[in-house]
Image: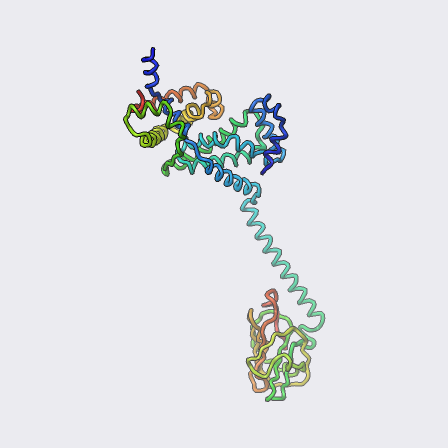
Length: 210
Length: 204
């Protein structure tokens, strides 16, 4: 599947700068639809981290998240022939991953265990972290682990739909409109879910919030 | 003013805490494994498997074709042998022959007509008439067994006292076993290939 580079070179760099991200994606999607399987690699490389991050924060388990992300890419690949470009590829891909993850979480409600990714060094030296460390008078590594677990616990206490909105907005940084397209709900519903979810999180994490 | 900035910095909101979650990221080794697994799974999806009902149907179809081919071969062999007069009425075909008159010499007779694995006892008096020379096929000892092909049996002289039984199995064919003193044994390894076992019968 080394056609990625070939396809990448096929798109002139100057054109790539002038067109939107969605247009670039569309060009690659069309390549895949025309039978250039390797072009799909470009899309995988581009979105794997974002997609994995969403799935990981939804399920709180890195192994499951890796499997579910791969499933989502495979599902998208299998049905890419039916993708008509009514929404951005990014939105379509995220919708597939979200629905697949939510259905997995429903099926495996009782069998839940968590495994965490490492927190990047930059975060541990961030201002927020320093504030928390001084406030709680805890050593950094301990605080980091504790915080990671508490945040995960609090997120898991939310319903799947509320968790999805929080993850997409607060962690992935998507706007309300994008979230409404991915979740298939109205912008109003997204806002309301976000508001409710934040209230719950605030109550649950009050010892860290000043 | 400075106090206000310090205060705002010392405040931690839910949003701030959730931003820390963004920093949870897998390492490069994880992505290497991820890519390798994904490529493998993608390739598997490209090699499409037929649905289960088609696989079952194909299996049955294969069996039917095999069965039909087997039946055709058996029928052709049966008809061909019947036409050449080696089956039923005419001269009995044989692969071997004995010297029925001589008790000291190990004359062994085997008939080699084909086949259907019908296990039967017989009193093949006609066997004693077979004239083919078996010396080269079977040795003088009972234990001597030699593979043999299918040949024709020719009657030579009568030996009415001879009694034989016939046995068939997948591994060997006891073509005829002498129950009298005239013949000791008529026994041979089965050289019939697996497609031919059970397809044969001895005719005396």
